[in-house]
Amino acid sequence: EIVLTQSPATLSLSPGDRATLSCRASQSVSTYLAWYQQKPGQAPRLLIYDASNRATGIPPRFSGSGSGTDFTLTISSLEPEDFALYYCQQRSSNWPAFGQGTRLEIK
Amino acid sequence: EVQLVESGGGLVKPGGSLRLSCAASGFTFSSYIMNWVRQAPGKGLEWVSSISSSGNYIYYADSLKGRFTISRDNAKNSLYLQMNSLRAEDTAVYYCARDGRFGVALVGPDAFDIWGQGTVVTVSS
Image (tube, rainbow over all chains, first blue to last red; front, side):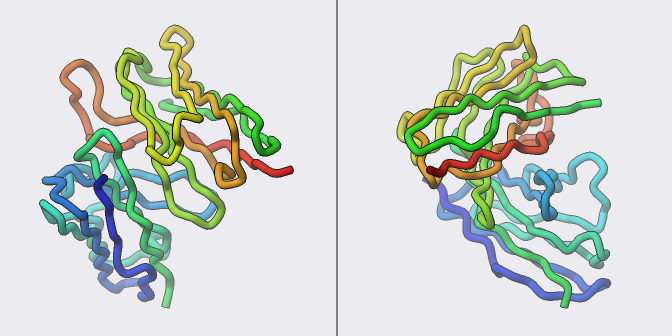
């Protein structure tokens, strides 16, 4: 079973700041990693797939990087609507587990 | 419009059963792998189960221990989750989600690209 660990659990930043969220896998998942954003009371929304590809309609301030076991989601300049929960998900096996999430909150 | 709409949630007693449905529209349902994902109150996302486009390949999270059964009816553009022997820890919002890859060649984003709004399941006496 592949376990994903996200850090930090909570990130406190201000609009306009750069956000860096981390996701570490317990074993290599190559680039089979996705990122999702979830706002209160809403379903998750796909942001990034295959570690670095933006999903349709996702603004360019969102970017993903990494391979193997270490991955990063970067938001270059935070907009007010970016404060939400973020989850990574591995797609390397037939059991596509999620990380526990990072809460991005307004400082 | 591409859409997934879940239904069938509700309040059920421990040990009871419930069948969730997910109605798909706006895309060729029979070409896509489909999934169930749940989220307990205040908790993170938990993948529950996946089913291939034809229904021939099915996977479950180990934690379910054979209590849940995923199925689909491509003629009705519908996905199902039969949940038996329900426990308090099964209380969650249940989402159906489309795997972005389609067709035999699995072309497309390798992620859950379309989600329903969720249906709430509460297991309590």
